Structure formats: structure tokens, C-alpha cells
Amino acid sequence: MKFLVVLICLLINHYWREQRKFSGESWFPVFQRWLSGRVKQLPAAINRYDIVFPAALLLLPAMLLTLVLWISSGVLLGFITLAIHILVLLFALDRLNLIQLSRQYLARWHAGDYEGAWLLLEQQAPDRFEGNFTEYSGLHQKFYDFLVASYFERLFVVIFWYLLLGPVGVLIYTLGRLYYANAACSGSLRWQEDGGAEALIARLVFILEWLPARALALTFALAGDFVAAFNRLQESFLSLTSALELVKACAVDASGSSSMRMLVRLDSIEEGDNAGITGATGATGVTGAAGEAGAESVESYPEWAARRVEELMSLMLRSQVIWISAMALLTVYGFGN
Image 1: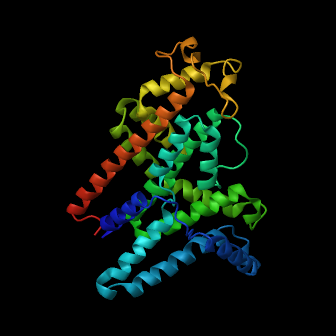
Image 2: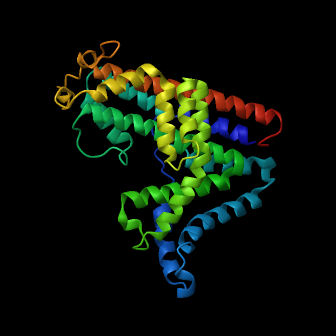
């Protein structure tokens, strides 16, 4: 059943072209504040342990979901259980259609409408893109990082833990990631001044992302430049580096050595030579600067940046085919039923 649920949710994400209007996450800050007040009212002997709040925050919804799944088990030939699995997975997956968003972004980018590209991202993902547009080199890097983070945190990790632990595992990871992301953005969500709850949940998220990050990095290696990406994975396999940073580095390596060489050349250009990339629609890019830096082919920064995004999306689609095929094989041999 798990493979069927994953396919249904991926199809919904693929064919639902517009941003899904329902959030499904608005209840979590309310529940968090309510629970914070209840925990503070506990006896001091219990409340003094930092683990009490994060444990209650993650386990209470998980226990409720477990109860609902137990009650609905076998009802209407299992269709109720199937619906619950789909709803939980859709709740955890990104509400944005990354393929559609990338196409809209690149259309504006190729037209030189960099302010329009920024406004598109600000409208579709206001929590990740806010403030005023200043330079399109920064815009490109933010969008590139956003694509990698969304693919990893809101797709691959979710499906990884769904296959291993089912909807309860997905819910625990998703709520932990939401809490940690909110706490990092706003101190108003903290219930303790020392941030003990945030530190504990950060460790939990780190643990839950450690194995999926290496699995996705290996998938990128299989779908792209194997030698470069696998060498990077070997170097960082046992390190305590951020899971997202590891995935991002392997994605860049797997996308192709030509992009990496171009990136190194551009990064080596002095700030004075790179001044033309700042500004809005009047920016001229760094055409010719790559040649001055010794790049193998002269290419403007906007053209290189657009190609880099296209290579990333192609890598993501190929890697998705790999792990969907692996899921199908595992299902044939009885895993995930």
C-alpha cells in the first residue's frame, strides 16, 4: 500500500499546477502555544527537564494519529486507512509544484525580467523570499538553494521515513522540522529562554536527516557525475556537517564538472569586475568576465545561471526515477505492503 500512496501523492504534486491553498500547518503554532502553557503548569520536578516539551509536542499528535489509524483499520476495505496515509503524506510534502515554479522562474529569467522572477518567488514562497530585490546573482543562488532544500526536506526525507516508519514517522519528522524552522526564524515561538527545546528538536531533526541525506547524495551520484559526487560523499559521509549542505554539495558535483568550473571562475573574479551583476532589470551580467578568468567558454552569467537550474531540475527528475524504480522492486518482493 505504501508504494501506491507514494505514487498517488507524487501524481497529485505533479499535476496540481497551482499552489495548494490549504496550508494544513496553521494548527501547529496554536497547538504549540497551548501545549507550552500546559507544560509550564506541570510540577517543577517534571518541568525542569528540557525533554518534556519537545516529547509532548511530537508524541501527542503521533499518538493521536496512531489511535485514528487503529480505529480505522479494516473499515471500508481499508479505504479509510489509505485516505489517512495520503492526507498525512500530502501534509508533509511541499505545497509548491517545483517543476512548474522552475519553468515560470526561468521564463522570466531568460526574458531579463529579474524583478519579475523575484516577485514570483516572493509570492509563491513568502517565507523563503522576502525583502527587496538587490542583485540577480544573489537571486539565482537563493533559488538554487531553495530547490535543493525543498526537494530534500519536503520530498525525499518525507518519502524515506514514510517507507520505513509509515505516516507516524512522517508526522514526527515534519512537526520537528516545522518547529525548528519556526524557532530559527522567530524568537516568539520559544517557550524557554535557554532554547533547550529547540536544541533537542534540532538534534532529532539532524538524526532523522542524516541517513536520508547520504541516500539522496548516492542517488545524485548514480543519476549524474558519479565520480565527482561519490568522492564528495566519501569525504563527508561520517562528518557532522549539515545534511542539507551535504546534499547541496553533491547536487552541484553531480550536475556536471563544467558548471563547477564556471562557478569557480566566476567566484575568482574580483568584486570590481563583478559589479555589473548587481541591480535589477538593467544589469548586464558578467559576459566576457568568464573569459578573462580563464573559463573554457565565454558565457554570460544569466545564461550560466539558467543552465545551472536546468541541470539541477534534470538531476532531480533522474534521481526521482531511480528511487521510484527501487521502490517498485522492493514492493514486488514484499516490502512496504
